[in-house]
Structure formats: structure tokens, C-alpha cells
Length: 323
Ligand SMILES: [Zn+2]
Image 1 (tube, rainbow, N blue to C red):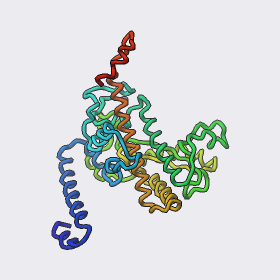
Image 2: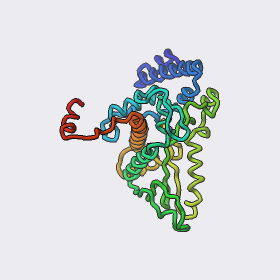
Image 3: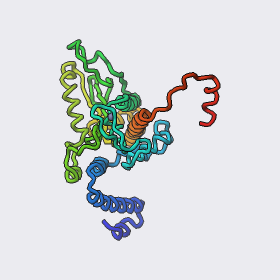
Image 4: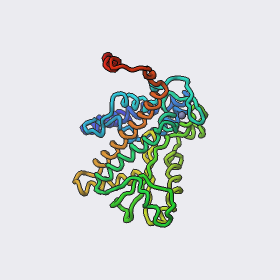
């Protein structure tokens, strides 16, 4: 397809602008792909190819007419920098992390979003997704409970597993559906970003398929962990896996589609609009949580000065005057 064909076939068509945009976009992308290979930076290549897709950057596209879509300026800046794989201004250059392997901290924030086990940020990220998914489930006229300790103990009362969510009236499931939520890195190496990537780019990443994605192995790990206990207790199980770039595992996404169809039945809104609503909520929730993780880590790297030994009322009354 070139400009001449578009101008002759879509001349009086409402799709003219759209077709021209697609043409420019794909031409820009193909020249960008060439420059990627010339650059020969495996991490940037991996980032680029794992990011390709249309739903991954919804957080940056939504107009904040709903409270669910709004983010603070500081978070939005960090989100857009992560999307473009640029330096996060709050992360100092050349510092090592104090976590187990003491890696060199990357300034793009990969280590701080998914690679670092410190300061509880990974837990808060998955909690943010759990809360958003619980809202979506309730909105779709299903109900859910958090971290049910008893649902997997009907057969063995010492069973230690407990799911993030137990969903009742989930579409296409007769038994209660147990959902376990994880957020994984979009390509390997965030634990130690300065180490070479385990896969050989660029050839590997340009032919990336679902079987190679990090969400795919995370999905299988969760099934191996939970399925047996779920079968013995007569309940269903679904891993809900999101990658840090926003990619949602296809089976998890299918669940969202089913919820959208169920919600559509009760709310008389087209299900495709509802699916877009759900994906937008999740995207904003994920990207905000990941950028909050960067801010939490960096504020601990540069803590404010310690309290004065003797703090007077005069100190407290004047400290905010110039802030
Ligand atoms: Zn760390």
C-alpha cells in the first residue's frame, strides 16, 4: 500500500486520515527497526519487541474524565519515560542496590519496578492490580472475596495456599473461581540489569511468540502451583498475569472479555466498550503502581535529613513556610 493507492481508493472515504496515519506509522516503525539493529543494544531491542501491541500503553492514551484514569504529574512523567525507555530523573547514576545480588541500578527503572524485592513494592504492585480486578468483577455482577484462607482446606486442613481472589458467579464457571494475580517483568534481567540477557537478541526478540513471553512461563508456574489443590477441592483456578509493559496473558484477557460480556447483559452497554474500560483501569493501575515503586525506592536512596535533636514548636511552625 502506498500513498497513490490510498488517495485513489479512500479519496471520499472517512478512513482517509486513518489510512494515511497507518502508512506513516508503519514507515516510521520500519525505519526505526533498522536503527535498532544498528544500535546493537540488546536491552533496547528486547524492550522494543516486547512492547509491540496495541493495548500496552492505554494509561498514556486515556483522557482522565474518570477518577480511575487520573494520575499525578510526577507519576505521569515517570510512566511516559518508562514507555519510551528513557532515564528516570530520580534514579541516581552508578549506584548499586542493597538487595541480595547488589546489582548496578539501571536508570530506566527496570530493577526498581520488577527486579527488586526490597521495600514491599512488588507486593504493592500486585495489590493494586488485585484491587482493580476486584472492582471489575463487582462491576460485572460477580462477587469476590480477598485471600480466602479456607477455600483450599476442605480436604487437607494444613494446605498453606490461598488465592488472591475467590470469585463467585464468574462467567463460564459453575464452581468458585480462584484467581492468583502476578505482575512479571516484560523481558528477563530486571533482577540484575547490567548482566547480559539470557536470550540472544536481536534475532530472538524479533521473532518473539507467546511461548517465549515471560507471562507464559509465569502462567505455567502458577498452574503447577495451584491446580492440584484446586482440583482436589473442586474449585476452578485462573492465573491473572500482567507483564510490566502492560501485556496481559491471553487467557487472563479472555476472562476480562467474559466479564465484559456479563456486565454488558446487566448494564446495556456494548461489551467492547466495557472491555476497553476494564483494560484502561488495569493499565492505569499497573503503570501508576510501577512508577510509585520507582519513587518509593529512590526516596529511600536519598532520605531526608534526620530530625533535629530538639524540635521546638517554632521549628514546626516555620518549617513549611518556604516549601
Ligand atoms: Zn534491589
